[in-house]
Image (cartoon, rainbow, N blue to C red):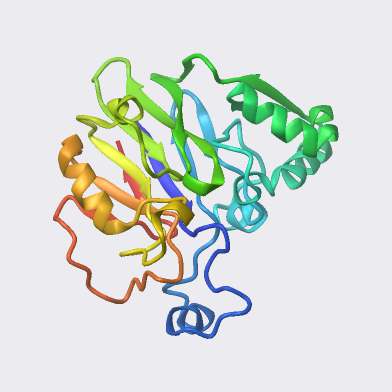
Length: 258
């Protein structure tokens, strides 16, 4: 049995934005329906233990909400601050607990992290994720995806070795090539990043798909269920959006058993 728990569903700035007084940000400050930490996911697996995807600057708050003080494995999608800003805090936690953290990331991501935070290697063992790894009963692989004006990121594919269940985590992508789309066909579950419902800005300035594009693409890919993350303050969880029955917005604490 494996549980997926959304610990963060926000975009790079989170919600509320400190400078913003829009309706969504104001609601997030009061009743908290739209309060969103930076995107991350907790995976609880009977064999592999506690796995965490991405370690953004809200990691400490997310761990407190999860009532956790340690994790077994970290998977890192790319080296942008909203995905690695919590690594120094995790390293400090490892130091106080007298243990080494284990993090998997593609080699080029490890190089970027090491260039910014060279001291992290004292407490965290960074392992190459260029080839597939095994976590419990899951075969996990990574592949490079376009991240628009922000360069690149990686997505992760989880394939259960006995029952064939397949799900993917793709939080930061846009303009995927045909080859980059191939792992997304026929998934049982896709976690996909969409910052806006319909993003009004020029395509060449964007970095993540919007919801309208996700609806079209997931139909093309034949995804059975899609959960949307990496949500900006454009998305109001109190409102109804015309989504297919197979798609919904993720919220903090949303838990699935697969």
